[in-house]
Amino acid sequence: MIDCQEAAKLLHEYLDQELDKENVAKVEEHIRKCENCIGNFEFDKALRLLLKKQSIQQNVSTELRERISKKLGT
Amino acid sequence: MSGEKQAFPVRDSVAKKREFETLTMEHLDALYRQAYAFTRNAARAEDLVQDTYLKAYRSFESFERGTKIKAWLFRILRNTFISEYRKKKREPEVSFDEDYFSFYGAVAKDLQACGENVKDAESLDPYKLEQVLGDEVIKAVESLSVEFREVIYLCDVQELSYQDIASIVDVPVGTVRSRLARARATLQKLLFNYAKNKGLWRRPSALLRVTEKVKDLFSGPQGQEGSWRFFFL
Image 1 (cartoon, chains in turn orange, red):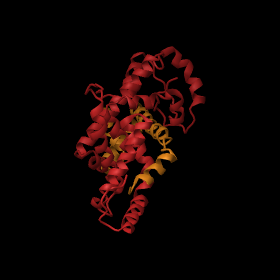
Image 2 (cartoon, one colour; image 1 turned 90 degrees about the vertical axis):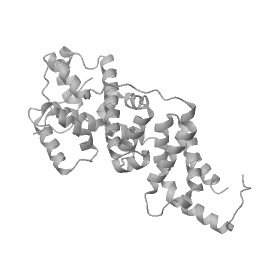
Image 3 (cartoon, rainbow over the protein chains, first blue to last red; image 1 turned 135 degrees about the horizontal axis):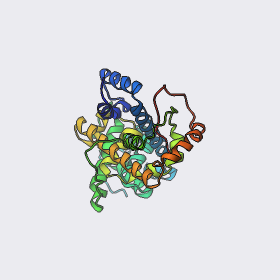
Image 4 (cartoon, rainbow over the protein chains, first blue to last red; image 1 turned 180 degrees about the vertical axis):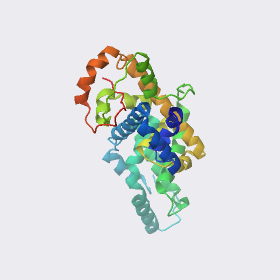
């Protein structure tokens, strides 16, 4: 079983869904059993969701959309 | 603003414009968010987006139909930023130590050193996290260097794969991986410092009182036996 250091290194790629099956299994096994790392996992997950949530509140003005459309092909 | 020699009949450029808009306009908001990641300013972000669309339109012939147009647009956005805006302002580099540690890990160590071992397992809901951290998350991201901000946005907000990010940023996938890891470690460190300065976590005795209170605050499924969460008020 991998240790906390190893799990911490793999955790981000795991949350990014970029790990291969073998390493996914290792990370999940570790998180299931490790008191320290599960909190880390939850925090990172929540942080990403929060960043996404705050960012998707940003949208362009309708004015810009029209302005761009006008400028194209002039 | 015409005066450009038109080699094609008008009908063709109308068709081109229509095709271009059909393919690209749906990505306007996503491009704006990424532009904001670069400029950290709404007005400049809009300018950057506009310039990007104009450039993309001008080089539309070079776009290979069937490939990912979003990645193509993001590359143009990035290059436009680098050539036009970056020149004007030096981006401060955030320093960090290679000693890779996690926010949670560091705090956990300190808590354990104080003899605290809170055994409670509630899920950390991002909405609760927002109540605690509020604006600090966005502020912390905005204080990162542009290289770090860029990849964090591409990964966490745009939800692109490492491969797509690599093609946009024009580096190998391995570099994307390590840059993201460093960016996140830096971000965690910033948030950790914020929490520490606010005295939000380092209160062993308060933590015991808080344990009961927090059980109500955090909703979510019961975790596994023996696992614990770090939470702070």
